[in-house]
Length: 364
Image (cartoon, rainbow, N blue to C red; front, side, top):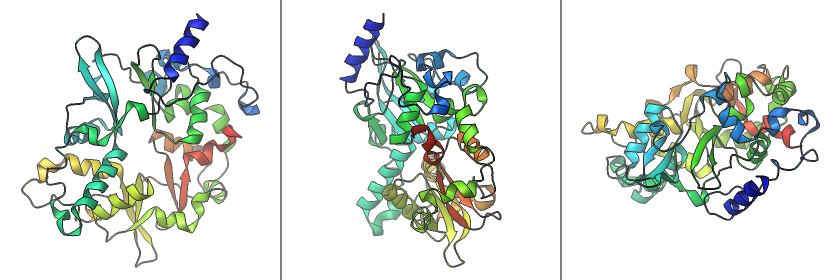
């Protein structure tokens, strides 16, 4: 049986569906690469197939979506759909991604890629650059959003994925190379999609923060963690901020250029006082409501950021005195990879913490 599994995994590695290299963590002891504090933790060595079957647990593992044919349409969209269809579905279902499938009578739904909020932002930035300054008011008037969902899709040959035979530790190791919010689990024998893992599923089994993570950051203030990260650098604070007078188009271009999923909106004429936050979700929501705006003259990315941003009083943020374990818990609860750190009053940006800052000891 083990030989059969190994041969299937070997053949899977050569296929274009997964970019995940062959990982031996399921078959060989990895004590030489696993940190000492995690070596005796059974969760780290749990195969993802077992995680998918852990429906009796009270945490997010028990609510993990299962993709089998047409069973769960919430996370799936047809490859015949348009960008506006994808935007609407992501907003209604509060998702940052959709699995794009090609319906097949004989094989069921064949996965062709994944559409994401970030790809929508980069697509929007490309369109904005194409039309130029004088014609931005025409953007979002409908013509671009009627394009195929393929325009905001990552095809399977570039889609990051793992197999049911990989382990939790494999996924944690993968986070070092790329900070993902979700990770498709793909069967090596037939390339079917068995499930979707989020970072929260990996680090909060049974609804509680994974012991090695909690052990490291309990009673350690966010301010101290920020000091040891690149997120405290002034250049990075500038990278993650935009003036409140900016237009939606300006925010989209900056997020695409800097590969960001949010921008802190500040008043640069008033000592960079924080006014709110603009995210990928705001832009996707804006696109999904084009039908409501049609004919009103408000179909332009030349609208101000403040018209659709989340105000400062409601934005997700950390402060220097917050406990580190609470901060990472809040990030996992909201499925975000980056957290702005502000002063206690929430008026001045001090830096940005990445999930990678909290996970670095797991890779030491």
